Length: 337
Image (cartoon, rainbow, N blue to C red; front, side, top):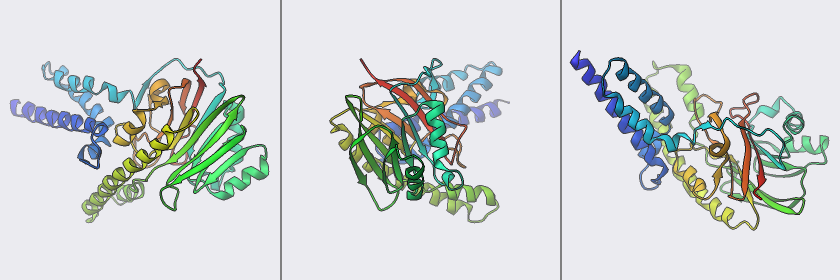
């Protein structure tokens, strides 16, 4: 029995080590050292298993439960980026109500105008940021709802009934990857809205194929190595993209709202680049587990709404009633008085 407990404790210590290494991803650029970023993908699962270890040691009345508990306590600042504890939400409509949604192909069989009308009427939303959308969807909106003002570029769309006074784009390649922005006028106040879509990990399809074919596939190990190689490569690309975008954001002449699909977790260095200067609305007002990716890889939070410090947040929700391979994200906010 002693040998069994020693083996269990060894596994426990290995898990604690991996958890602590994962936490470093927020502070070490993958351009310098990318191993922590690979492990950070599994950080929520590491927490869950650490809790299981702690409960196991408690059940056998062994003091070694303290090790996992200490690891969990150290991780609390990271947990608040992924698990929301804000039970009080103000569902009253504010002056600015934003939805961001990586809609992928959901509108190919479902008219986009129906979603927009529903969100406008039921949720009082007045700014919509879509990623992975086609120009045909924009034409559908313009035909059915000519009172909306829109800016579309390379699969990204910002839609609002507020007047658009300026617009622009930062494109990293000839694809959906990049950013568009608009200045809108709400009463006498101007706001700048950014709609961001950063470099994809390009692992979802491969992961789905691996799961469908099963572990018997003789090429499984090689494919998994390729999948993680893609992730490590795209992580480095996103850091460069995020730095470029942040420089532009910090030069904004008016309060900024940043929406979109970062394709990175809240434990990543990419997230830290933004959160060091901006407020994460989930962290400020989220409730429950913050998963926004609805695809084959479970537990990922990769869609965000940030603002500068000029705003107060009254509500933040992940709208799980609708989905593509992402869930829409809603935030209500107002300027601080």
